[in-house]
Length: 192
Image (cartoon, rainbow, N blue to C red):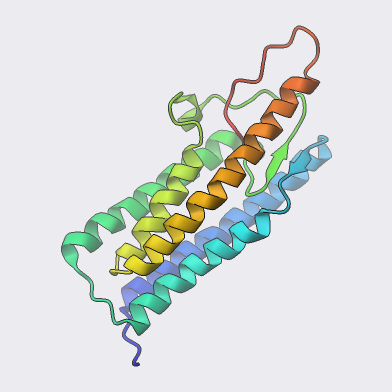
């Protein structure tokens, strides 16, 4: 089997990988900020699986496109590239909107108000960051015809998101349980 991979697709996947590194840097800084304010981390058990899945997505994009010799099909590739860019925009809108409360882990700081700005003000879109993840996970491989990677990531991510979202909802519910008497109920957005 020979290796056939477009240099611009390699660059795109590497740029997404660098974006992930930037996320981890921001997350580490925000975790220190949250911990210093009494933040509690939830869901440590599923986090390594999430990291592994996102790493496998990037590797799968390159391996499938390169080893399977997937062609670039403009009718599919260009729209998928637009979705990858849109997903990055939504992701960073979430990061900026949540400020120091954003993290790749589920960390809740008791006493802080829940964020209701940016995409988190849109009631039907309770977890906008995960919309970005799902769109990017399907679109990035499909830029270069990687349907196996797109399908595999989508199925595994859906299972993982069930666990993750339940974890976040439980963490947010714990805020309501520890809120001072007379405080409004926790109805804001989950820290994603």
